[in-house]
Length: 175
Image (cartoon, rainbow, N blue to C red; front, top):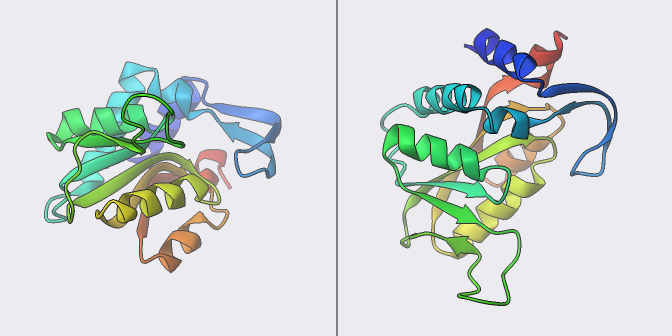
């Protein structure tokens, strides 16, 4: 499974080397540009297929959530693959329209799976979990495409949230 995903990520040009500043503010010699993957229908389809398999049955997931902008294609693709409705979590309220942080229907008590593209420190995932929980959702799992293995899993575990990743950075980089 991870070899196929690794080849797809490399093949679409999502693995870049150089000097980068990550969303967490950390410096890195490599960057995983998941937007290149999620805008490629074949790679996005593969990711949705792998996430659907990893979700398995029996978790009782009632909603899938993606944080705007990067994780929304993942939420949409997984929703289409599984038939489970999705919601979008905004990073900030708009000052027009409804001013909601969560777009789409979310009922109190629903079990929500948060999907992420890349997890480093898990800042975006933590924000999504907290926002969804404040709206009454039950969030117990975050699933990402890539785990950079830089502490995000532990942060989520401290929130009683299981983190699953389709592939790790060390697997991609061959470490």
